Structure formats: structure tokens, C-alpha cells
Amino acid sequence: MLFHGPAVCFLWLLLFLLDLLLFNPTTIILHSANLLIWILVTIGGKASTEFVVKGTHKEVPQELIDELKAICQDNMTLDYDERFYHGKPQNSFHKAVNIPDVVVFPRSEEEVSQIVKSCNKHKVPIVPYGGATSIEGHTLSPNGGVCIDMTLMKRVKALHIRDMDVVVEPGIGWMELNEYLEPYGLFFPLDPGPGATIGGMCATRCSGSLAVRYGTMRDNVISLKVVLANGIIVKTASRARKSAAGYDLTRLMIGSEGTLGVVTEVTLRLQKIPEHSVVAMCNFPTIKDAADVAIDIMLSGIQVSRVELLDEVQVRAVNIANGKNLPEVPTLMFEFIGTEAYSHEQTQIVQRIVSEHNGSDFVFTEDPEAKKELWKIRKEALWACFAMEPNFEAMISDVCVPLSNLAELISRSKQELDASSLVCTVIAHAGDGNFHTVILFDPNEEEHRREAERLNQFMVYTALSMEGTCTGEHGVGTGKMKYLEKELGIEALQTMKRIKTALDPNNIMNPGKLIPPHVCF
Image 1 (cartoon, rainbow, N blue to C red):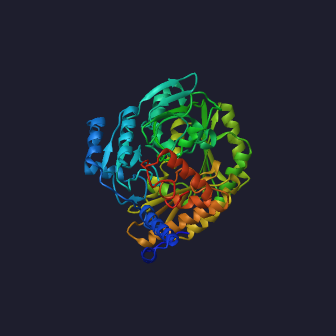
Image 2 (image 1 turned 180 degrees about the vertical axis):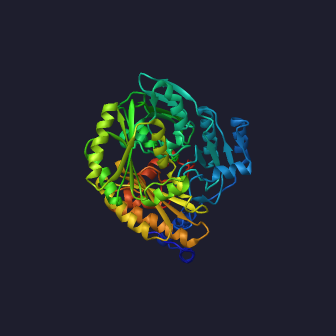
Image 3 (image 1 turned 45 degrees about the horizontal axis):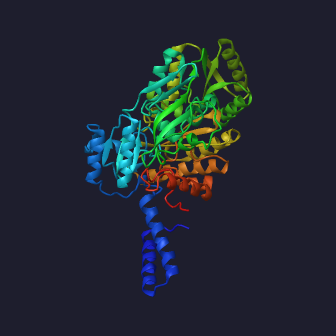
């Protein structure tokens, strides 16, 4: 059991001092342990309504700074503005009490290895940094230390067209990679937020709207090269499409959020650019009708590549932001790919399913520009929300449940969101049971913060009660740590802690992320 609050801390301190006077070894251990746990939770944890990630900070020794200068030469900085920029997430409401002390920009795997080795020697924390598009505070530096900005490492190292794979450095963005691949008729099929880099996508085990067809990041990475805490460079697998050789280190690293190592090379599966595609959109009277259609489409066996759901509040935001006149009702968007004949056949089947669930205004297009305009509605959904409350911040959260539970999850969550005084929108990757909510709140109003957190917790606990997860694709970071024990159990967290301790005994790799601070073994 964990104890919280300054009064409780004072009580444990008094008991500890009393035990010292009486020299009672058993209770000395008990009370000192409880005091230590309180300190760890208070310093390393996050108050549920403060969104400020606390940490401990110690001065970076001059010897380490000199070593980093020798390794990186001009590609390091102590400039406050640069450090502040790297300590402030671009898309997250989470904040940290500290910022990195140093920012380095390695140009090679060897430099990363030397940087990590030096930091480990001095026991100074490391935070890997890519596109900084993460939602849950992954790139915060609550303990200060060294931020390793990987964006100079963005080369395409090898393209194997006949194998349909590519070897890249972690700093390249997925959009940049697809521009490179397009002349070869290939593409990388994951599409998270614009600006995301391949390294960060590996770290968070992300996905996107195409995951319903092509899978998530863990399904599309063949192998990695990773720098461990001691500076050793590990290759996790060969380039073969399948292997039964040893532990699956690739999957261990994907989703580890920089807590086990720094990714320096990624081998990715590629896909052929589809010959033909059709984009469709339709409206529904209720969000449950829309979710039921998504489930029925998946059960029908249709090879749909995207199934996206927007609630009426999100559609209203799109109308306000982009001057559109869309019906402000729950809306589904689809994409079908394949040959022209196959795409048309899929469209007709979906149109029939839609009509069976009170769907209306079914429209579809094959025109390239018209398709871009339709998908622009979905891709710019987050930014459209701010048109409704321009001076507010957004708490963005995602959960995922088995597909059969999606309609109930969305319906129950939507009822709670609609009853709130805050503006809340729903956006879902409805084809794989994953949905997001955007909760707009005034950062200067404590009641707003508390209400936003309450809504987030309601959604998470509802998903967990349906055998779901607290995060389908955003990752844990600092924001979802408190839900992991309920989702996975303490035994799973202790196993994760053992792995972390074995690979990173000095706890320098993105400390304070992923594994809750109270977990021990």
C-alpha cells in the first residue's frame, strides 16, 4: 500500500526516528521503507490534476560536458532557449519541472554509442528526441540531463526493392521516407501525426489510420540496431522476413519508449502503392450506429484500408476551422484499395451495410484531388478542435478495446463527454477498436484540469473493464503510467522492471517513463 501527503510523510519520519532511539531493527526497516516509497512517489510521480512531471535534478559534471564536446564538436548546445524547446513537448499537455542541461545532435551510430557510454559513466540521465509529436510526455526531461536529438540521423541507408524493405536512420520522418519511396512504387504504410520520425514511432509502438489493413509498428519493423545503456550496439534480428532464432529483441525494443536503449537503425517492411483507391463518407443519426457499421464491415471480410469515425462535435470543429458545411452528425470515412473493379465491389458492399444501420448521404470519389480533400478532414481534426476554443489546451487520450466492445465503449464514453461542461470530441480508428478523445480545457482553470482528468480516467477505466488497454497507439510515457498496474498486474510490471534494471542498472535511459516509480522486485 502507498501512503501520500506531507502529514503522512512527517508521521513516518517520527516513527523512523523513534525506532532509531529504541533500536528496533524490524520496524526501522518497515518505517524507512514506507518513508522512501512516499518520497519516490512524490518526487517521481505526477499528481493527477497538476500534469506537471516532477523529478530529481543533479548538476551535470563539467567532465561530461567536455566529453560531449569532444564527441559532438559543434553539434551540442548549452543554450537555454534550445534546451527549453527540447524540454517542452509540442503536442502534450504534460509539463516538466526541469529541462535538459545539454542537447546533443549526433550524426552517426558511433557518436550515439560514445554519448551514451559517457552519460552512463557519470550516471546522468538521457532522453532520446525525434519529432516531439508524442502525446504522453515521452520527451520530457524531468530529471534534466542530456537530450539526444536524433534528427540529424535521417539517411536512407539501403533500399531493397525486390525484398520490399528499407534500412533507415531513426531521424527520418515517415512522410519524408514516403516521398523518397514514391518513384519506386513503394510506400511505408504507417501514418501517425505529421512530423513523427521513424525512431519515435518505434519507441511508442505507434500505428495510424492504415493499421486496420497493414498492422502497427511492431508488425512493420523487421530489425533494429540499438545502443544500450553501456554503449554497446546491439542488432536485434537479421533482415529475413521471419526468424525463430532466439528471443524477439526487436519486439522488446519497440514500444520501450527509450527506457531500454536508443534506436540508431531500423529495417522496415514496405508495401506496393495501391493501383486504385476509393474514398467514401457517410452519416449516421447516432454514434452507436456508426460504430456498429465499422464492426460489421470488419466481420464481412472486406479488405478495407481505413475506417475512421468522427462524432458530431468533431465535424462541427471542422466546419468552423475550414469553412465547410458538413452535416454535424456522427460520420464514417472509408478507404478501399486494390484493382479498380475490386474497389468498386467493396464500395457497393459497404454502401449496403451502411443502409442497414440508418446510414445516409453515402458519397464516394476516385478523383485524386477530391480524395485528398476528404482525408484532409481527418488529418487536420486535432487542429480544427482549437477553432472552437482558441486559447485552450487539449488533453488528447486514446484507448483500445476488442472490436466487439467498441460500440458500447464509445456510447458510454460519449454520454459522459456530452454531459461535461468542457468541449470534447471523439475520433476513432474504428476498424481496430481504437478511439481518441480531445478534451479542450483552460490551463489556468484548476476546475477545468480536474474535469479533463476525470473524463480521461472515465474513458480509460471503461476500456479496461472491457478487456481493453489504456493506450492503443500513443504509448505510456508519464501520462498513462498510473493505469498500468490495473491493466497488466503487478507481476507484469515487476517483470518489466527486472528487464529495465538488467539492461540499465544506473537508470539513465529516459527515467520516469513507462514503469511506475513504486514498482520494485
